[in-house]
Length: 118
Image (cartoon, rainbow, N blue to C red; front, side, top):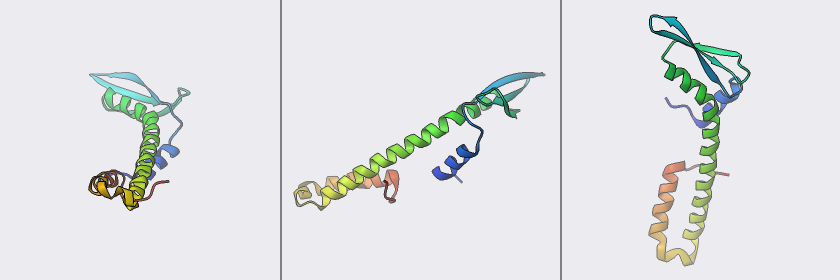
């Protein structure tokens, strides 16, 4: 199950502050233990996977809150567009383009759902 935006934000809020980095510690026989470090160089966790996974974890700690903020911003913009479309559809002057406005509103609703945005 995919977590909601609120669930993802709660995970970010509960995690040690960003940014995170990583440091490889070769263990021999091709095995690399990678340590995830916080912005002060303090130990967060170890990853016994490939270096790419550790790099992803470290990058996600900084990127995820930024992406969540951008999603919220875009949802707010789309919510405003939907509100303006509703106003245009209700206007007697918008009747000549009702179908096109309904199509646009439908696409916006598909993108953000039915909830009203601030």
